[in-house]
Length: 226
Image (cartoon, rainbow, N blue to C red; front, side, top):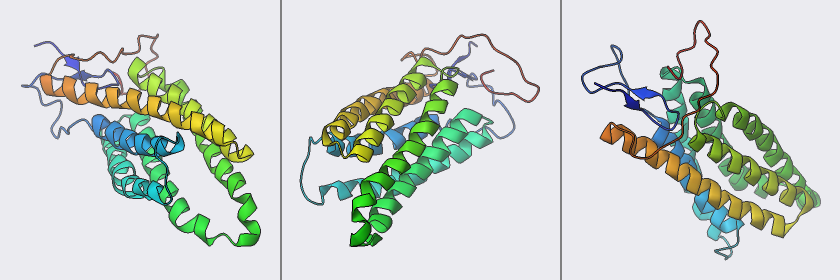
């Protein structure tokens, strides 16, 4: 029976009569992507200024805690179980990003004294800059995964960069641009998640993810992408 693609990483999915091991687990990739994208989409709508109103942005916090944060963190743990270094690092890190973002907005910013309130854009920019750097080097690694995943990290890097510039310089129009690019990022990630779960469910490639076909270098303990 022919192997098909497992998920946006392009790894093969064993036929139904093959267990792939004594303790197989489901692919956590579509969950991690879905958790990431929904929270990203909702926040980006507010960053783009498509919905305005005092306090409305608080709708992001429950998503950041329970779906973007907790669910994505769990997906990262299962990626460790599947020996997928890229997925484990990406999902665990961005799950922690959403948890830390929720804590920053809910607890840190309100606790800053009025005398230092003018520094809030700078510390927000620093927070975003650190994640921009992380996302940029994950973009390099994603080129070895698939076209669908690389597109997500390309747009996400651009999103973080624009939000960082907007925060540091207090440029609302740059932040708004970051919101629009974030919506594009969400669309790319939703496609990758949709492709992953659909291809796995139908056990064939229904939606292409454009697996990377670069030259490979085998490592003694490398079990990814085989």
